[in-house]
Amino acid sequence: MPSTIRSPRQKLLVERITDARKEAGITQADLAKRFGKHQPFIANIEAGERRIDVVELIEIAEIIGMDIHALIDELKALPRW
Image (cartoon, rainbow, N blue to C red; front, side, top):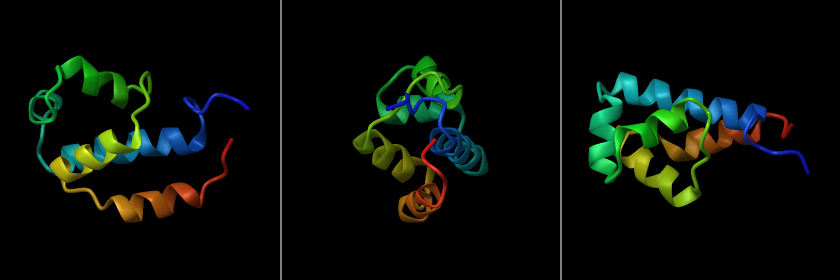
């Protein structure tokens, strides 16, 4: 099975997180602080260098006000590779 770090789904996930954070007017540093991490943690996610698990995704979505159900539906509609 190929790595998912560069998959279409992962790329869209990163794009949606980044866009939602910016639309919420939250900086990477603010998100990291609210999430209990350092800013490079968020930067690495947004650069596509770090994957996040489902629990992290839920918590980030709650902080930035992202509809996680709509996001998952959108991701499922894309090809896996």
